[in-house]
Length: 420
Image 1 (cartoon, one colour):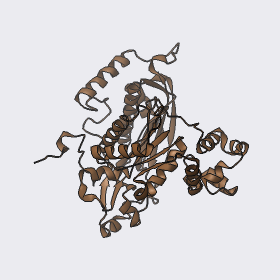
Image 2 (tube, rainbow, N blue to C red):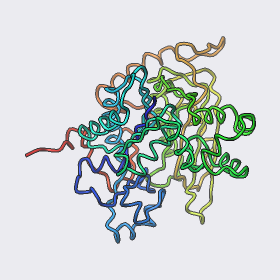
Image 3 (cartoon, rainbow, N blue to C red):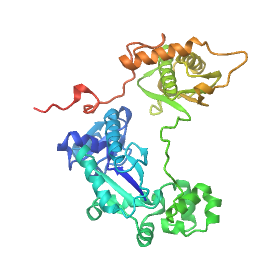
Image 4 (cartoon, helix red, strand yellow):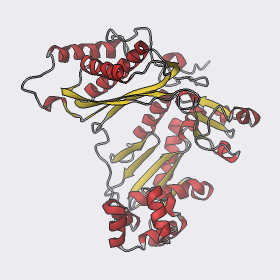
């Protein structure tokens, strides 16, 4: 049997853990730079706050309905997520950390375990130890746990936040209840394709012919169909720490920049960040994509959205090398008079650092490896970005607009709650 544990309204719930006066009140969390709503409490949903609502447009609405607004506090949310995941591993070692607020669990060789009771124990312990409300769906396959979890969340008073699909009758009833657009893994395009064929629910989907599903939705769609039929085809992703296939650092600026030097400084910082991430996962990159973006919201100003792909002469994880080619790319893309609001660096073509292809005529200075290792060691010991390359501003760090930021209760010693 599998279980899907989902933290309810995760970001909002994290804020409530340390500010219980927010319970039963509308709470919203804003995205980077306080742009739009990315998390809502149930109370905020009831008064009509939509997901993705632009904060500046809803400012008066928030004030009128006494909505409590918070900036994203990612260090706090990440730490709370880790605490929940550690508790879940007490019940089974087979845990897939699916997202910051979701995890799949697999129960193997547990005999005649009472899964309803076990789910309630998990729910109670997570809430007692972290203050985090969760919903749990338990079923024979991962796709069915997604549906079970929706039922547990939708009818929490009846299910106590835990729903188990453990009979054929429950499976069929759940599939008939689930609309096709709500099925995990069915995107917008496939939803339209299935609706055109008269499929409105998950039950209609599983009753389609296998050959048609494979022809129109591919092997992934067929596996999903089998999973919904109760035949496990989607196993746990065991290596959730596998190296990324691409690494990106992209940021919106607090202010627009129209001078080349400021843009080169920012791009250098982003390239350095990518290099540091590469070294952390022991990878090197062969390609680097650099882009600039003007402010798309200011329609009256000239728009410019250039991008440049750099094919590196050799695979590298050196900050010096990536910064060199990134700044060259900016010089080629830059247009005088344009006000740029966003920029980014994406590295791809990743290979293991100890297995990169050597070039007969070109190679990186071997001193770079030892220098980068020393810089990483110092930055780890004394704080991030204590050492930078020369064209970066030593006194400047990228800072999001966070006008409603709560304290970092669990990750900053100065913000820990004092008990008097």
